Length: 119
Image 1 (tube, helix red, strand yellow):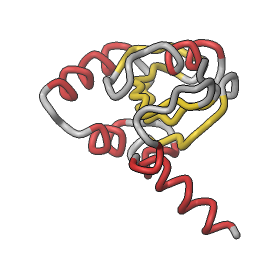
Image 2 (cartoon, helix red, strand yellow):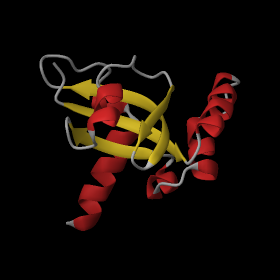
Image 3 (spheres, helix red, strand yellow):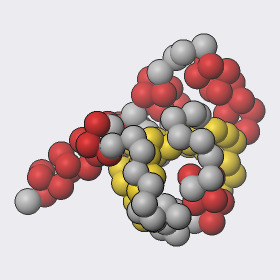
Image 4 (tube, helix red, strand yellow):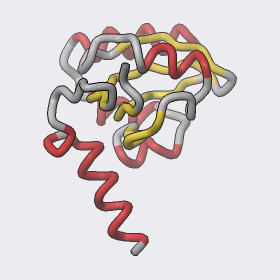
């Protein structure tokens, strides 16, 4: 069972907008573009990247989605105390599963950049 994940998300205040954005994603509008334009989370500056995080650090509903939905496919709407999320899981690791390699994914690069910036 995976213990960590790397995900992108778009946070909005209503479910109707998540449905509109999911249609845009199916039309190949980039997740980054939509996150930067519509998300109410500070992560929008990074295309919605939450970086790598441990299981049970994001709240029950968010964790349930992140650790069960298919990789690399936008999923929504996930309701939390903050609003409605569209989530795209880039990878999960721990428990013997680590596909695709984290070093090739945007959130791993952002995480490394943030870590080196604070040193």
